Length: 539
Image (tube, rainbow, N blue to C red):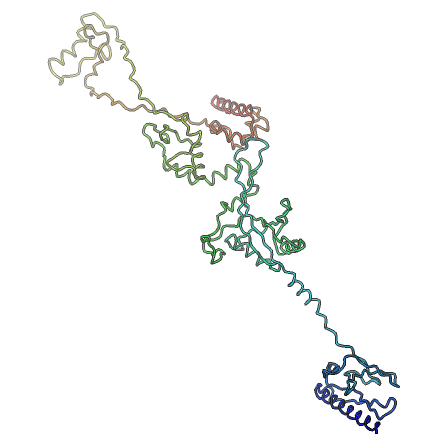
């Protein structure tokens, strides 16, 4: 009786397991071929496990099916290893009411069932992992911009060891960006900070360095490679992701192009003024230009003002100084020579003088004033020499005939007989020490005395005309001027016979680093040259 009850309960359990397996198979894809074993308690030995294989449908691409361990909550998770007569093992999951074994089979038919471990997670591809790592490693960075304007040209050097002037810097920022930024986006941030266009930035001048330490070395940031190296180097620091970008002022933008700016900026719209001209940057060696190049640059900037001064102060603008350009202020009168006009024009270019007010300079000091010329005083009267008068009666008669005819017949009288002495004079009045002026000859029109006029200033001596073209080398060889003196003359732009060399300012001489004795020797030989030309020694 007891055995029959146990057999019936086992049959019910097997039937329950069979129903569970059928329900699982029904939920699998149609292309899945399944092998499973059912437990038959009535059989003995290896026949207790009945093998069942689902039919294989039409050939299709095999798909991997998930292995079902258990679906009921009451199934234990620990497998029971059953020893079979065959060489294969099967894992059977049991519960108080049922037990079964089940696995998927997409491979070729085998004689024994196989144990399948739980599925493992798929590994991400290397590319996807790198991209995720970069996305996770991106950090926020910051930087400031220092726009460096070159120092103005050195016009004079007081000492030999004088240090060049430092560049003028304009600080902008700070600005933030992500380490995953591209180079065009980074350049756009820089252009927006300078309120200019990206094409106006001078990429070749860009450099960066760490904010700490202060003596960190600058490194180039001229392209995308430089930006990548900068970001990589900053990320290796693990903290303090800040640096400073050094750059030259951008090129001037055209008026028709809008500059980059944010709509919510408080600053007035318009490009930033760095006090810089692009011509100063493009000029090679701005602070080490030669004297001739510096003078040429000064002339280029001051020529418009020089022309305006010539128009405002023409020659003869003051009647007291005919033939001269005169400027007058409370100090006195100044003759506007070429040197004074140049000094005035340069001061106007710098904005420290106007057309009506001369600059504060030694050229317009009180000691450089001139005075109006005084009127010429009349020359003292001198005794007129008379010819010796004859005492004979015939001679005396000839002397008095013109006077007698004028008294008796008026002015309409014939011409007198020719006198023995030309232009005879009447006798001086009694007691007079100075004889009266001579009478004009008969028939001559009486001319009125000339009106007094202002004294005429003598015309200045024109420059000495050279008999031929004389080169500077020939000039220096003739007057024993060495190579150093010739260098000074070349920097001054001197040509033999140029008298402007005597009017040069002291500052201009100092730029050439000429010694006092060399300056004296150069001026002395210039004076000797003018004398030799006048004497005809160069003919």
